[in-house]
Length: 66
Image (cartoon, helix red, strand yellow):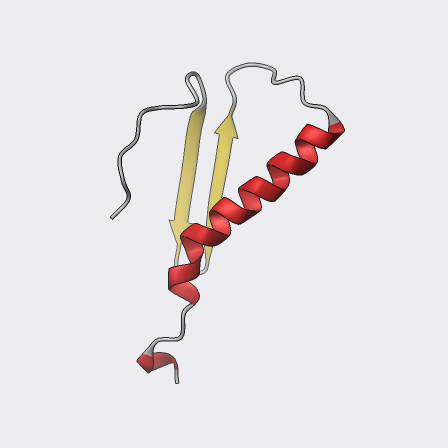
């Protein structure tokens, strides 16, 4: 179970959809973050890592997968 934590992104609005073969996450920042190209690259890498961490348990081979 996920651990409930205090909000760290006040004003951001999250939208999520999970289906058997896909997941979509959309975040409206609620304001302009004025990101540099370096910020964008770091954010993309961190988002990839966070989503990968959340999905990893579902990609572990299960006995029924063999």
